[in-house]
Amino acid sequence: MIPASPIETLILAPIRGVTDVVYRDAHARCFGGFDSAVAPFFQLRQGHPLRMGELKQVAAENNRALRTIPQVLTNHPPTFSAALRELSAAGHAEVNWNLGCPYPTAAGRGRGAGLLPDPTRIDSILAEVMNEVPVRLSVKMRLGYHDPDEFRAVMEVLNRYPLSGVIVHARTADQMGDGLVDVVRAGQALALCRHPFIYNGDIADVDGLFDLRRQLPQTAAWMIGRGALRNPFLPALIKGTPVPPPDVRREALLKFHGLLFDGYGQWLSGARHRMDKMGEQWDYLAHAFSDSQAVMSRIRRSHPGNYEAAVEWVFTQPLA
Ligand SMILES: Cc1cc2nc3c(=O)[nH]c(=O)nc-3n(C[C@H](O)[C@H](O)[C@H](O)COP(=O)(O)O)c2cc1C
Image 1 (cartoon, protein in one colour):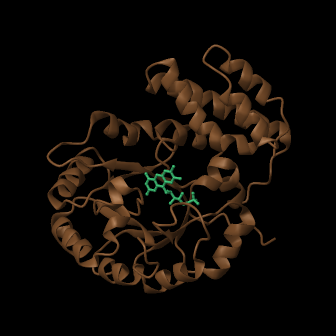
Image 2 (cartoon, rainbow, N blue to C red):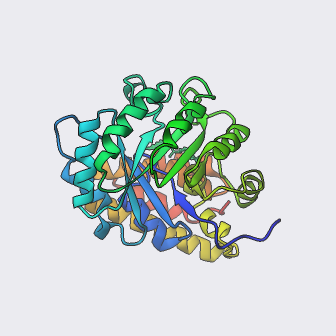
């Protein structure tokens, strides 16, 4: 194995419903390793300001443990500009534009990845928005919507604007989150891109990252989502922290779970809502245990009255 590099820049990916303010804070306090995070998208509504709850999710005072960049989903320049002004007024220096969301409610309506087949439209949106942009703007995109070569024309457009970075999830929107990532095309996107290039997609272990680094040596930073949700130690391991012994790992996971549970108790209203949120977290966190199926089924069978007993049982189980 190649020695880990402490200079690798790591960004926590936005995973809507999971990598929220509570998760980001808890992860940074228990495991560390990330340099920043991009928050899950705010779907901008024409003629409406951002919601208070959205601003709270990304406010610096609630994200002290991990610098967090808000992300917006829109194809409407005046709404886009208004949101950038609002986020700037709230103290944000950088905002990320989502050009990768594959869901029909977004992509099917020409937002997110739905813009990738139309570089002329991306150009006209950026021309309007970048005119007097009050913040640095970065973009998170996929290789394409249906066609994995759409990134070529899109990158040419992005190169014309002073963006702070381009994150490429090396899949098409049609692939959703499945199927192989296309590292060859990611390399071609990197070669075309004149902005700092951030690779994203299926970084699941330290060796996987080193393989990618060999193939994409000019990459400025790496964005990790599900790999870090399943193994929250991953970013610190990439930064060179040795694998902690099992009792230390168990302790960190237990503290992490406690921060999530308490945090959702404060941020959400009602036991049911909090349980649903913990269920979404366990979909990933169960993989930290060697029998993730047994962990998941025990958690799924629990209810607010016996959840804590279920968690106690889970933490007696062997770690992965
Ligand atoms: C449930 C789910 C929600 C996601 N939400 C967002 C989002 O809000 N914004 C975004 O740009 N990408 C979103 N993504 C995509 C991830 O940020 C990331 O690009 C993708 O999971 C690939 O990276 P990974 O293999 O490291 O997870 C989401 C992915 C999943 C699975």
